[in-house]
Length: 206
Figure 1 (cartoon, rainbow, N blue to C red):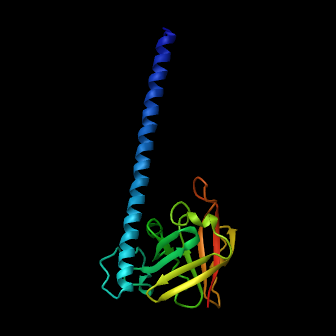
Figure 2 (figure 1 turned 45 degrees about the vertical axis):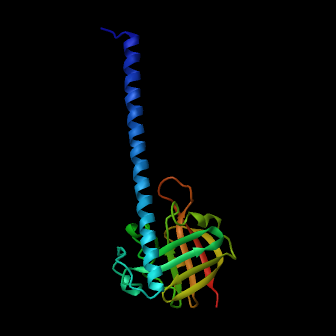
Figure 3 (figure 1 turned 60 degrees about the vertical axis):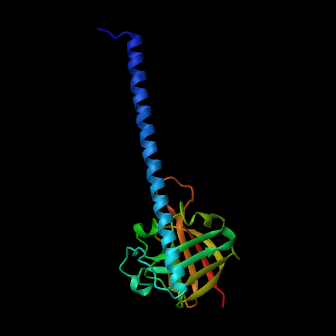
């Protein structure tokens, strides 16, 4: 028996409505997840700023979250490296030891195999393009970068920017002088896993 065309149309509309509501629910859930991640990252940044300010004042630091890495002994007991600032871009973010996903969700991470800022060599920091390192899209040669730690405050001047493949690790190679390398994914507004890396290289002012 053939279905009446009005019945078929009603069924199609019913299925479409249910699908629409399902997509709306999924969208709301995804927005909620993103909001939770942002809130967690902001809370973590606040905790680390408080811990850092206390350390800079010589007061005992509170029980700040420990960075998820095994190489924290070279930074501070909590894995806190310092604070990264790029005044022209209004970028101000705490830097933790480690480059794993858990670290990069809440902070900019120092690549453990590279020099720490208070030593001589190439200090490499990584951050997500859709959070802390999004402002790097507007950086330009000559911009100043300040990296403050309990071991001292260091000012760098941007020398160059470049786009490389993820397999190109030459930008992380050791240097004879104190330099700073910032790495994030590229393109900045790419949907999905970005195919390239955006690299900022800067030299420390003596």
